[in-house]
Image (cartoon, rainbow, N blue to C red):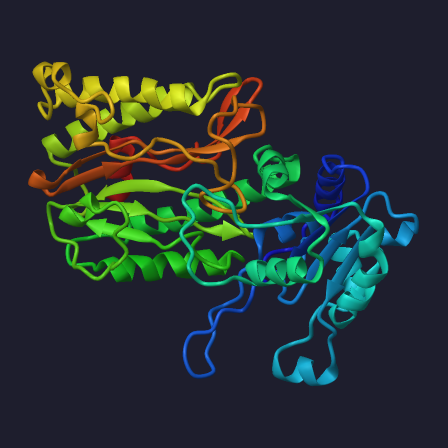
Length: 428
């Protein structure tokens, strides 16, 4: 890991809140992600299970957590299991956390080597009435590969078929939706690194530069500032590529007169940021490009103002759609007749703005949370309206990250250039 040490009070408080939501006499079990293989002896860099990290701060493989708030033995209320380090491991892979370091990271006093997990579990599991198992429950989830978590759960249920199994995910979704001050600070740090990367591009982008060269500039800036890199696959889409919502090829030359859509952001300490900006390759928007850009910006500002305590996302998306509808009529892209004849399930504005405006953000860029829950202080959302016009080879999307507070929306990215005139000025 590259990030500076995180205050373990974050993880101590997270475990307290989680434990308070368990049924009486319950054990909760969590496991880390696998190191995923590629080919031959290769592997993809390790990414921790977000829920395990949320509860422990431990960022290494082969880690398990047991939470048993009602344990008779006080040392069994929280037990962390980590991979046993050794001199040989230190030579080949780098040393893993020792027990003292694992305690310092997580705040958990009882740390054991993971090869003792099965033996320890046998000593306590039959005392508990309920067992909470975790799973990756997400509306966008589409995973065929068996994960470490799936494998862990399958083995546990096979060994203990008579236990009452409960789901940890609903509790985690409820808790993770509200960010603590520690988390807000980590997200702000990720946004600050993203800003440095974006500002680096303002003097770099010119006709003839390639999308992958832009990607290289960003990764240099991100890693230089203690980020692991991109919080998600970077979208660097010039010209018509910007009309492909999840364009990730990043292999084309950026030509004079085009606009580049940049959906690129850094992570920090496993926390995401999520930014979208659009840059004119030649340093100046055409009149039509600026007209569309300004329309998207007005929608963004109107949407941001609605991310307030007490609102809800379904009503919010409908209200944003009404703002977008007017802008598209003014741009000559849809007509009032189109609106009168529209399918209510797929309004006319969806032809040019086909995605949602906001999603939860935190440890995952599409973070967990209930979209039907009323907005509360501490929730973090993206705000990302867009207009995509393939026939004009133009796609404009603008996106900032917003914290809901009792005083109104707080923009994590308020210092990142956004107005068209400011961007033109800085590029020139």
